[in-house]
Image (tube, rainbow, N blue to C red; front, side, top):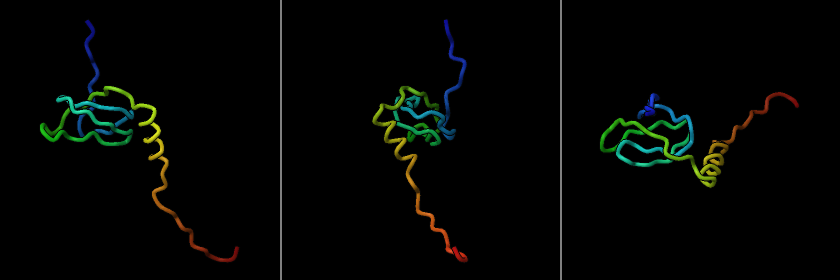
Length: 81
């Protein structure tokens, strides 16, 4: 009989792997690497379990959003060029 020895992530911890995670009560949510596991509305802090990896379309959307420019940086002209 195999027993699970590792602990699942808990609310407030950082997400290490993109994927669909489920709470103890069965609520599923797509989370990206670097996000923070949210608290459950009904039970507060909870344990999260990775139930599936994102589909190709979801992964492309995640990667596209990761590469977005957050704003334009302008450089001041100083001196002669």
